Length: 303
Image (tube, rainbow, N blue to C red; front, side, top):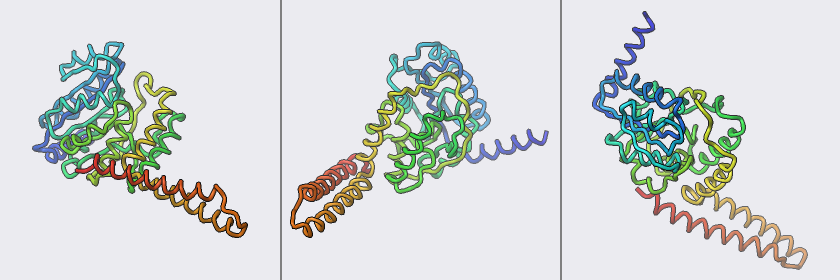
């Protein structure tokens, strides 16, 4: 009884904190017939007690099972990509459907509990984006994917010049008006969440993390071995688009230092080598590319 009373009290407190707010929940789904109904019911169970206007939007990404049919049976807003287009494409379609200022994204595979939506919405009143932080361990993430996630998180934090606890968490709430200017930059595939995090962080938007539990997914993961190549492309894209001078200037300085060191050595040897000239030219080329990339970045990421 005490636990129920405490839970009711907490819900009443949250309801008062989100009073006057509204929420669109976008759920991308691809071959998730085993979890999509439960995900929708979970969202309803935690948003109904708040007494606020909300909508649930399921975007089917060309599923080959009964995902689309099951989603329609629940009575939520449902749209389809018709063919498998990608996680990012599904989210962009769902965000276009959203009628409210606050938008939540939530995976359909059961990994993100909907109980975090009410407190995250309350936090978002004074933020541009609130991200669910799965924690450093992320115990339910397959071991083979952890090295790539570790490298990507630390590299992104370096580019953003702030610590990004969880770069590609699939549970977050943001203001639609703050995201819309960045939509042309957002990719069609899995790097959508990575890109949106960097767009917000590198553009001075208010963004905070909140701890969440990350559950074991229902069904099979959609990550494939070929996505390692996509990971490399994403790192290069992040470098050029978000904060290129953070990478190009140190790289140019390293080449310039190598050139100076070799030049001093060549003076003593009375022989100016091709290596010295190549190091100097490489540094100048790297800096020039960095300045061009920085100009393009500022054009794309300006408010």
